[in-house]
Image 1 (spheres, rainbow, N blue to C red):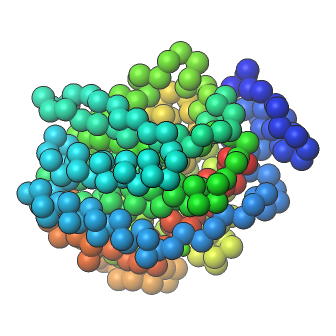
Image 2 (tube, rainbow, N blue to C red):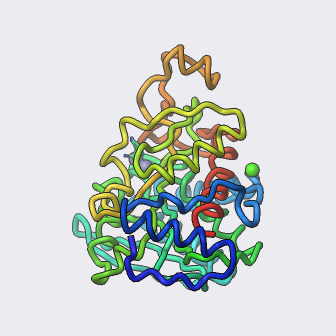
Length: 319
Ligand code: DTR
Ligand code: CA
Ligand code: ZN
Ligand code: ZN
């Protein structure tokens, strides 16, 4: 919520901004941020081949660095350097935020897209670290690669949204949301209320996928649900996630949050198989936190749908 929000936007968007401002002043949510009609400029399709190419790079990085991309290990910093190189080349203003956890140095990567009202910052993020037992391609290369490719699509489109766009890749999530909590705790006074919303993506390509939407900010939730309704894909409310990923520090700070999830070690039910296909009685991701969480541990359809949903929400919520 940003009481000092500037309404310096012309035409139709002014009405939206006014509605958003009033809603934020009243409800502290993103209500009104997603106008009823389609986005001014429709979000592009995110090529899943591009997302998978990033996953292949992350797999190679893990293989070349002891088999993982964990906090404090060389594979993590190599993953961050890969992402940063792509973002710098695409015109983002990037910065690396350093912190210490379990006696090892950790890093967050923050990428700002120049322009937009910095009094209304829309953020999309994912944790980039894996567990030490494997390469972490679904957990969470999937979220990291999809957020990266969405940022690159913003650059390709030279998007000029009303709100300011910021993307983030967190370190040390697996140690307990350490990087994202460090970021939130380090925000200057007043900056928290300048974040209109934080969108989190942690495990969005599970091999036996479910389609779960975080049940947090109503406007963000509705935006994701609208996307999946348009695809004809039913969704369920994400129930196991409260406090279990990087949206939690933002939520605790009063920032509207939302996100997507395809499931971890919990087993898919027969009822869910009727909705989504796949295998009942089997975990959504049977390689969760295991060495088999490799590039073979990805369902391409789920990765594609969720990548496109991220782009849709970024376009909708930032216009
Ligand atoms: N804690 C995440 C995986 C995870 C488990 N449940 C949820 C719900 C929503 C998002 C993520 C998760 C991890 O292991 O990284
Ligand atoms: Ca796509
Ligand atoms: Zn994990
Ligand atoms: Zn994760």
